[in-house]
Image 1 (spheres, rainbow over the protein chains, first blue to last red):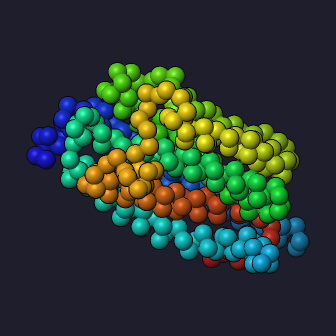
Image 2: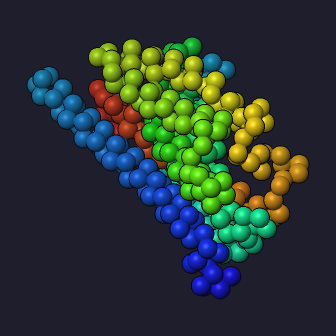
Image 3: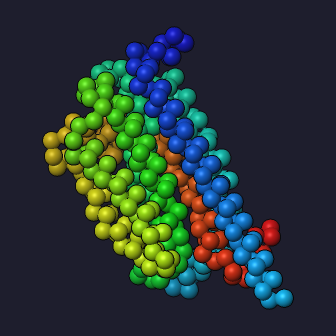
Amino acid sequence: MNSGGFWSMGGYARFVWPCFGFAFAVLLWNLWSARRFLAAARRRTARALMMAASQRS
Amino acid sequence: MWTWFYRLASPPFVYRVAAAAAPWLMATAAAAIGYGVIDGLVFAPPDYQQGDAFRIIYVHAPAAWLSLFSYTTMAAAGAIALIWRIKVGHAVAAATAPIGASFTLLALVTGSLWGRPMWGTYWAWDPRLTSELILLFLYVGVMSLRPAFEDPARGDRAAALLAIVGVVNVPIIHYSVQWWNSLHQGPTVAKLAKPSMPGSMLWPLLSMLLGFMLFYGAVLCIRLRGEVLNRERLSAWVREAVKS
């Protein structure tokens, strides 16, 4: 496939490229939100452990 | 056997295994998706009827397949948690819901963009499309139901019940193209004995399916660690895990 044909996707570029763009956006969002979720859980857990320790002392 | 089963499902074991597995799953997912995208967009020949528009299959089919797999996982995890009272089951169900919902949305959007040039419309109230939309609503329902209860244990049980009831939609989606007249094409890859595609089109698709599955596994591991931490916050093993 030549580069012009590649980008035009045989006239279907406005359907093919948004599909691939949206797919990669969904993959990136999944990774970003999962990491954010884990980081928030770690912070909450650390806070809960600190509070438990201060109540014991 | 039951001792082994319960040991596998213990929160510290799951937390450790998820932490170790996630980077490997993510690296292999990146390789499989990279190969699938390059082979699918550059080297696979255009379809004789659909031209280059058929390349949408490389993101649409894996997303649609994952939407069903993720829902089945969520229902199975909910059932395991309810029947055997294994807490990690609820954590798996909670972790898989947002991932599955996002892939369902991706399947609907890419299907709609594929439908416009092939069927002449972005949307039709077709059995396959409608049942997939219902799947998205089920995901949203399960995700909304869990935090709607003050008691998290009751929220988990209610969400698990809804997931189990909703699993009836999975075979309806899968067989809808055979049971009813549908605009949607029939199975392409499922009939492995005689697939409808030549190898040059099929290999990138299989690579994308594998890549999306591995990616799902990696993201599930990351989310599952967060869920386990939220649920086991004051356990002794968590103190060590958070420090490391």
